[in-house]
Length: 365
Image (cartoon, rainbow, N blue to C red; front, side, top):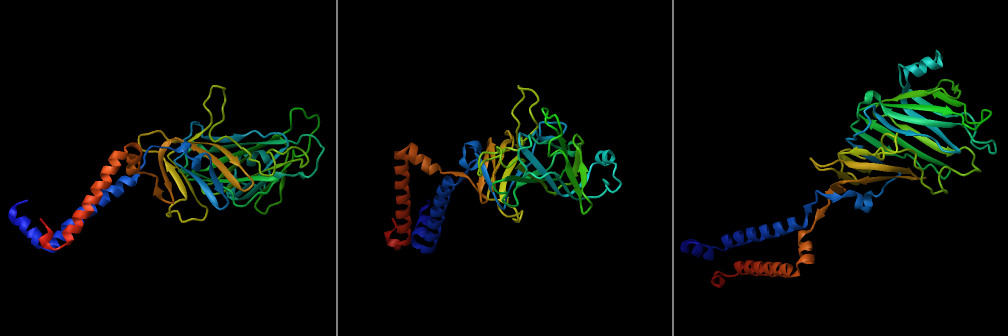
């Protein structure tokens, strides 16, 4: 520093304070940044928050930018197990044209949407009548158009005797096909084979076995699946009142043993409140980084009052909108204690120098 500038610096207390404050602020800002560097390569599957992620009442799990391995748009399917009944409810949907033609009921049309229910006509409280009919499910994307997002949630606790799951899509329609068939070993038609199809406030229509019913679900409209035991005295489809139930695999089903395990791939997954402002930060989220593989979403399970879903892959993680960070200074302390001690000494010297700047000009040499 030139002599005249140094002399002016020594004599002008305001300049000394301004320079000292700037240098101290920059040093502290740099060190703070080193403790809060966003991590871009977190092992998401290795974090307890995502293995699995718990979706509680009043929350929803959102899969943004889902990618499907099936070019036909198959999303998932369900082949029911023993003693299993599924009722399907649609908040606002319409019958597929082929279904309307097959049923040949003038009161039913495919032109308008309405509330639709597909439920068992027989009571599930009866026991000792043998294996009931089974209802298979197949859900696919209409015209194989990929959605912007998939939402999974529970509106209310199902209780110990049922397992409930709701879902909807953004930006794409779903086609849901339900087919009820008799067990292969049945010699006479067992109970649970006849279903009731109720469209809006119309009189329910009894649907005999082996007639597929196809429902088109518009984007943003909810689909609710209620699984329950047909015989309450027999083994339930889940173990115990708190047992988990796997309704289907996320992704297209395996056709051959050598096929990859069913998963969905996503650019981002989000856990947020059901009635939250979309612009508010989510409770928890994870996203893949540009140019790197997408996240994998799999192993969906339904509990009495919550959902569980596993997420794996490498990417960024946020909690309440705040990114997961790495503390380089803490890493430095762990890996090189001598370097950490040197940094502490430099900080002490910097603070001592700043204190001297605040002193009288005669103390500045």
